Every structure is written in structure tokens, then in C-alpha cells.
Length: 241
Ligand SMILES: Cc1cc2nc3c(=O)[nH]c(=O)nc-3n(C[C@H](O)[C@H](O)[C@H](O)COP(=O)(O)OP(=O)(O)OC[C@H]3O[C@@H](n4cnc5c(N)ncnc54)[C@H](O)[C@@H]3O)c2cc1C
Image 1 (cartoon, rainbow, N blue to C red):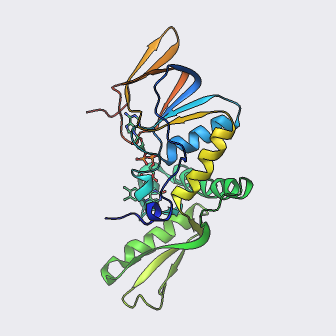
Image 2 (spheres, rainbow, N blue to C red; image 1 turned 30 degrees about the horizontal axis):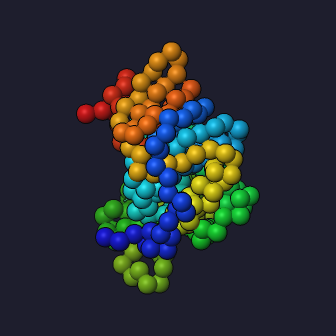
Image 3 (spheres, rainbow, N blue to C red; image 1 turned 180 degrees about the vertical axis):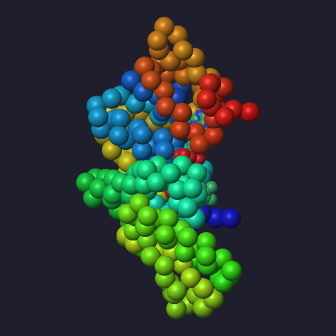
């Protein structure tokens, strides 16, 4: 299946660089999806020297193939959070997600990134009348901690079979690759470095510093952020198998 975001934005980094010399950094970020690039952006902006190492190409994996929605709505999730973790937890999760939407919008505005960002309402809908109670329970769950959600019967005249939906207002969509291209430009402007085709093969801790090894060179860093989506090192509390 093709990614529309990749078709619309084919390159993230204009001059591809491979790490082939040893270097130093305050922080080595491993993984160049939205998590790694956002982390590198915030840390570089705060004045830290970051080296980001990406195994293949930036924003090409999960991020480059995502749905491109920026929402605090993720399926029917809040009833589960409320039942299993309580109201305070569900509310914190909701507010953190809402804040993330605002932060992304703020970055886009401040850095003047042209990435097709649009405010949109988000919906989870059902075409099966028997599932309506789940949608209504989710609306009640979100409202119970002050979240903004409504039950609606119709969402689009072209979707005839919708029996009901939960609507989250003021959510957003964008082209994640265009957005990340903007962040990458700023990361380099702040003096940090980004390398592609630079797969990390080990991370060692020596004398309170980390040595991050690729097959060609290494990065010595005070801190390491693993942003590879799936674990790549066998460390305590990592789900590695
Ligand atoms: C089909 C799908 C659609 C989704 N849609 C959305 C959505 O619309 N909105 C949303 O918020 N979330 C969505 N998600 C959730 C999604 O996982 C995250 O939003 C996000 O894209 C994950 O980004 P990431 O940077 O953590 O991972 P990735 O984008 O996968 O990036 C991880 C990077 O690490 C690199 N890497 C791996 N191993 C190494 C190594 N050894 N050395 C160096 N680099 C390495 C990989 O090459 C990769 O580039 C979706 C998920 C899926 C599966």
C-alpha cells in the first residue's frame, strides 16, 4: 500500500548523511520517526547538542504510513481507562493528549511550517445499532471528567449507514512528513546532527557515559533516548524478546 504523505513529501533531509566518524553529543536520539525527531527538536531548542541516528530513512516507517490524525481520541479508549485506572488517570491522559495537539499547532505556527495542518472534528462511528451503547458509554466516560465529546447521529451526508458516533471537537490532521521536514530543518539550525542509514547495533554504559555504536562509528553521549517504536536493547523494564 502507498503512503500519501510520502508521495506528497518524498524527502525529509535534503543532504543525506551517514555516520562514519566518531562524535560526541549531550544526547543521542535513536530512531527518526515523529518521536525521535520531536525529542531532538525540543532538546536542540533547549541548547543541547543532539545526534540523531536513524537506521533507514527519516519518517519512513510507522510515522510515514500513519493516518495523520492529531487527536486525543483513540478508538473507544476512555471507558476502559476510567474503569481500569480511575477518573484522575483518564483525565490526565485526555489533557496530555489535548496539550500535545496544542503544542504541535504552536510549533507549526512559530516555525512557520507548511504541512497542511487543519483543525477537524474527530469521530468514532458505528453502522451497527447493537454497538450504539458502547459509543454512548464512551461519551459518558469522557464527559465524567470534563472532557469535550458529544453523541451525534449523523457525521457526513455521504455516510448513509452511520447509526451513531462520538464526536471530539477541535482535533486536527496534517502531513506528518511535511511537519517533520520543518522540525529537521530547525534541529540542524540549532547545531544538532542527523544521520540516516545508521543503524544502532549496541548501547554501552562506560564511566557514566553512553557509547552508541553503529556498524561504522560511535557516538559518545551523556544521555540516550531510544525512540525506535520497538525496543532494540535488552535493558530492565524494556519489553525485549
Ligand atoms: C497504521 C498506523 C497508523 C497510525 N496512525 C496514527 C495517527 O494517525 N495518529 C497518531 O497519533 N498515531 C498514529 N499511529 C501510532 C503511531 O505509532 C505513532 O503516532 C507514531 O507514528 C510512531 O512514531 P515513532 O517515532 O514512535 O515510530 P516510527 O515512526 O516507527 O519510528 C521509529 C524509527 O526508529 C528507527 N529504528 C528502529 N531501529 C533502529 C536502530 N537500531 N537504529 C536506528 N534507528 C532505528 C526506525 O527505522 C524508525 O524510523 C499509527 C500507527 C499505525 C501502526
